[in-house]
Amino acid sequence: MQIFGIPIFPEQASTFAKDVDALYFFIIATSAFFAIGVAVAVIYFGIRYRRSHDNQIGARIEGNLPLELLWSVIPTIIAMVMFGWGASVFYHLRRPPDEAMHIYAVGKQWMWKFQHLEGQREINELHIPAGRPIRVTISSEDVIHSLYFPAFRTKIDAIPGRYTELWFDAQTPGEYHIFCAEYCGTNHSGMIGTVTVMEPSQYQAWLQGGGMEGTLAQRGARLFNDLACATCHLDTGQGRGPSLKDIMGTTVELTDGSSAIVDEAYLRESILNSQAKIVKGFQPLMPTFQGLVSEENLVALIEHVKSLSPNATPAAPAAAPAPGATPATTPTGTRPSGAAPPAAAAAEKK
Ligand code: HEC
Ligand SMILES: [Cu+2]
Image (cartoon, rainbow, N blue to C red; front, top):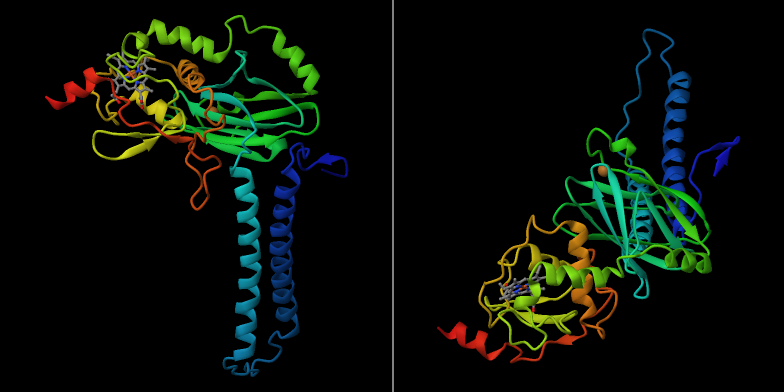
């Protein structure tokens, strides 16, 4: 948006940019209306009823019930409109559609790293197809950052030790800003990038170039061997660790009697902090990989484990759903009981 040729607002480049702006302008307009109204009344009454003689004394005014009700009820209604409208826009922004394309982002002093499932990796640049919902799962390698796409009107913190996510559907091909919106140290202001929205055909062509290392899941499969995960996690279920086949989206029972849903956050914790949740029927043998795998390698491992569950819902939510929100996807089922290999089950009885 431009006023006298000066750009006041970034372009509305996502499907919900208009909704965010409409709400924002409504709040600004309402606030301005009352702020200006009060200021004008103060000035007008100050002049109109000013004291002109020394012996003038103001009239004593007692309460006025209808007036008091009026100025309580009207603002309450206006505030509730802002709340209801805001909540509806918020839920829309916080819930990626199931069919969204998935991308991983990692914030690091002072750059944004993006990984595509097809294997492409980018720094401070992101290429995406137009007209397709994109879900970005974000983590941080050091401090809190915030991934901000002003033209898409969406932003979320990158928090060390956990996944957050945002989504958008960029409509118009073009180049838009990426900012870090959380002060993160000396070069915070330099933590910027460009998102290039391309026609879907152009994007396909872009994907063809590069990606020498194979897909993210293939890179994860190599890491799975290099880090010796494969020595414990056999597909047959006969290893020291559970088989990781078809676990995505299932409910796993834990030794302490509780259970957990296998999503990206669960896989992350299983790898980095393996002692936090012990799968029922197994010993806490798994070493912790905290500090041994970078955030980027971690998402590759997670994508590898996910690729072992080809039938799971593709978009298992990574971040906890907003309070009160129903999860965007439902777990695909409960793991069949007795999945624990006999050796591990026997070990538990000792
Ligand atoms: C020394 C053997 C060993 C190694 C090496 C090992 N794990 Fe494990 N892993 C286990 C055991 C035992 C469990 C079950 C107990 C638990 O939950 O900690 C497990 C549990 C898991 C789980 C949770 C599985 C479920 O069914 O819910 C995941 C995911 C996992 N490991 C991934 C990995 C990855 C990725 C690596 C390599 C970076 C790895 N493991 C390396 C032994 C191992
Ligand atoms: Cu930052």
